[in-house]
Length: 337
Image (cartoon, rainbow, N blue to C red; front, side, top):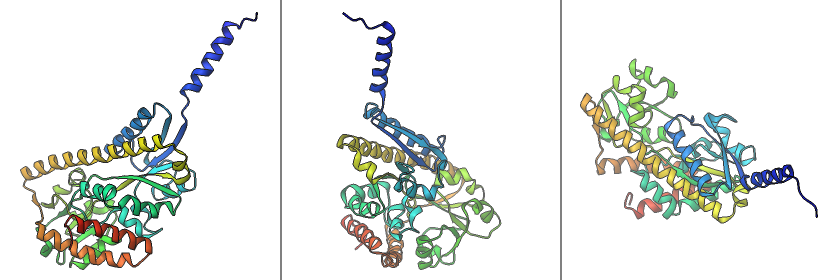
């Protein structure tokens, strides 16, 4: 009879323990957010949820602050296998196909994150968007957004009539077309120059970020008017995976990642909403005037946005398909005729 030494047993036990602890899927993701930011902390909760719900079968290494490649290159890095997935946003890919505008920020479309999420899960958005993503060897798991951004202004901005000749900082692309259609004078200025441009009067207002973030930027130390709740722009971040990587997951792992993405979206929207409400209370006490556009004013803005959407829909078949999907759902919920 042969006996195994205690050392051999210990080594074997250690090997079995290591094997049991090893993840089935070791995934590399990137986001533009820092780990310390609010959005970064929420992304970390997504990671923790996936790892816990999978019982350790999935481990995620996150590269924060675009540590591997530039933010705009994250999508391609995942598509080509440098990364397994990424958490940036579709709007960064509009140069690849204008259709990405309508997964990155369908400007002038929805009033709340819940409407946008409803389009994705119940209005054909998931299917329409993945026709675009999977053509680029990527799979879109889901969206997450903090909600509508706020416009900041040195003069009243109570409705569409106040947009006439209103000079404001705008990002390039669809937004400039929408506001120009309504008589404003959008000026493309780098985000870092917003404060100085407002301070010196180069612009009357700015589309910078959410109300709470605008407070953090110090904009309301300079200007005394803002739109809130917003109506014009709702930037969307996404959770994506390389299509081959996604297809390699068994159904239960896919379901876990999808569920964690929904939790991320839900909690992000709540977190930013609370921060905005707190900011709104503080700003009212400070004397800043907040404008909540009427349903009629929002409809007028939405009509102008729809005219700009038409031009983008003509650019590619994929853009047309997504515009048509959004419009079908907007009609369904009574936002457009």
